[in-house]
Image 1 (cartoon, rainbow, N blue to C red):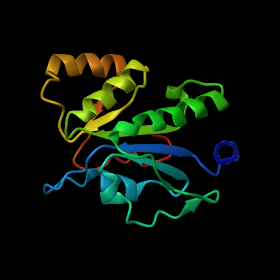
Image 2 (image 1 turned 90 degrees about the vertical axis):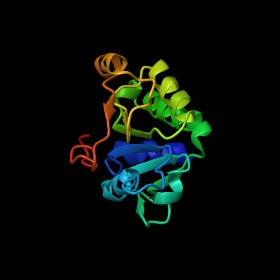
Image 3 (image 1 turned 120 degrees about the horizontal axis):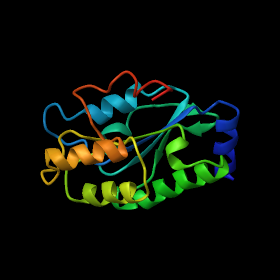
Image 4 (image 1 turned 135 degrees about the vertical axis):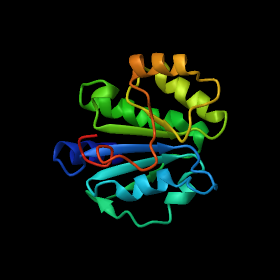
Length: 169
């Protein structure tokens, strides 16, 4: 099965990291963070994309890794459940938690659907999520501080940081 092939590729070291790039990249000037991130990911990584932001990144040739396409379309924002199931399946296959996986999650805050996606991931205890380009209006500085402390939530920067596009992110 495809799942078995992915697990074997991770075990063999062919796939070293997974990136979930979700949400909307937006059409405004400067809203190309997610496009840049996708294009800077290492060749030994797989990009799982969901949301309309995928239309900004899917026309680039990312090649393959271990015979698999590096860019896997997981659907729209409402299909986050599928990406979560992939992460949970990998965690089960490697007998670890989702936070122990070589997984970077970068979400775009562009509209209200992103709230449901973020809250779902936080409810699952997922840590280290990057969110941007600006925090949702309802996330006050105090609320953001709590989310940073408890879930290691980070705001994206103007450019994808070097540590995010390395295999040790």
